[in-house]
Image (tube, rainbow, N blue to C red; front, top):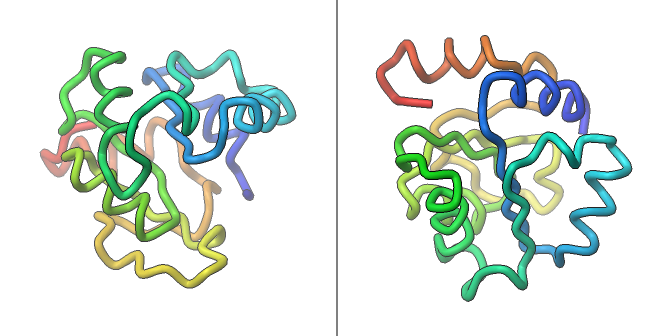
Length: 136
């Protein structure tokens, strides 16, 4: 995904990062290691780490609890209808990533839609969410 490794590196300087995936942990860790960003995440949850998959909010709620933050302080990046609804059900802010929406899922419920991770950094998060009183 264009810009994802740079975005992770930038965001990790100012925010705690968690990854909640519907894929199994082994595949998630492989992907993070391939991008050389595994060490940037405080929490990594695969499908086997929470009881109900997306659109249930279980994975996100577990990550929020483990990070010891409030849901309104969290921004999640998602591409699928189930993932977006999972984030919303957990009370999180949701940014929809358009370039990975290969199945043309409805992304209209997200708070913001972005083409990819190009330009996503700490300043972008603060400008897009903090200044509006939305948290993050």
